[in-house]
Image (cartoon, rainbow, N blue to C red):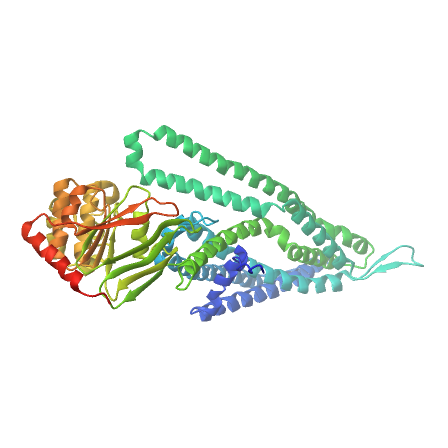
Length: 609
């Protein structure tokens, strides 16, 4: 039996980063991107022209000094003023051009990456799959900035280095000339000896830097990850401050923070060692580069075949050439940090690609979730799995009609909440079908409602805009759910996530539900923090205000049966939880019970299509 070809794996993170980042130059903003790119290139060429003119100016003024030509010195001093002003102006424009390009590229990539991160609940699903994509918020906020800032500087610097090398190699060749060694009757002539010396010097420095700092990229990436994890630990401490304080967990949290920070310091120590090694090369280069050309030009100057101005010009040109050739030496530490950020952004992009592929219709590992003209919510041969294929719920087949209330029961770990997320479209892994009624709105109520930053009005109307909700309607609903005492604080901005109790947050969830008026409601322990009387009040409101909505409730409280017509019970089985029963719940009220049983009897007489 022939082996099946393996599907292609994800591209290397760096390649994936460039595949996404180049969209700045080929997408909607390509005109602005290319104008900035061309503008920065023009500025580099103008700066090179000024550098060349200053190199010539050095020769002329030192020749005037050597000849004690006062008029010549004065002339060169006057020439220097516009040259200096032009150089300063170009430097200012260069900063503007580079930073504008960096800002535009970062804004484009951040918007693109954030849109993909937020689409289809990817920000939630990333927590459910394995891979190198931890702390996506740090990658978006910090690594995107680093990965877009450095290439612009590198591009400008590399273009400047190449054009500078080409220009000043010519200056070295012409000014330095040939070097004659050995006896006059049989001299050894070395043409362009200053150029050869500059190339050899730069090659030695570059090889030394690559050899000494070869671990820089890996060390920088490890340091960035450790920093991100430490920030995440601090954020979790702040967000869960109440629970930690009530449990008295400060000592344990302190120990955890110390251990996390110790890892940061360990990686900083490794990075320090890499910087020390690279400094050996870079500082040697900084000290030796201005001296080497003077030593090489000294024989010709002492022999009278080179003027003082020419020697100064050659020395300046040598420094320019070796600086251009040693671009990698000077930028290697930053290059390593940039590569680490590129790999972190690329890894996040690969993870998002994986999520999008697994949720794509037709995928072998994706639940087929589609709309149907039938007003019934249907689960057909639905199996829900983890990302690695492990079955959580196996072969569920359920139909929930418009206006029907269904209670989902089962012990912890049977996958009830996972089923809810699959119905909501947040959990793509599995197979089978989920048929949603066409054009119907679904509203998911989790156990812990999300509390955004801002005013209480924004909290209560989320995810609608507060401007879309009439003040009178909001105040009425706040009164109905038992939060009337907070209506005077609707426009107050406070840390509401910490101010509101668990029960108050769940009441806010019911305000949102009644504002949205959905057709399908899925509640996942949405009343667990309420007392029985408050729970009854909230459920009665839903029944009264949204009588045509289908309701799917996950809960453990037996008193909730009074608000439902059916109950589905899941049980652990080998190979995944199974739906073991679909039972009717008879209404407690006599008239309602009579209507209920007549309705069920009538349905049994209707043939299935």
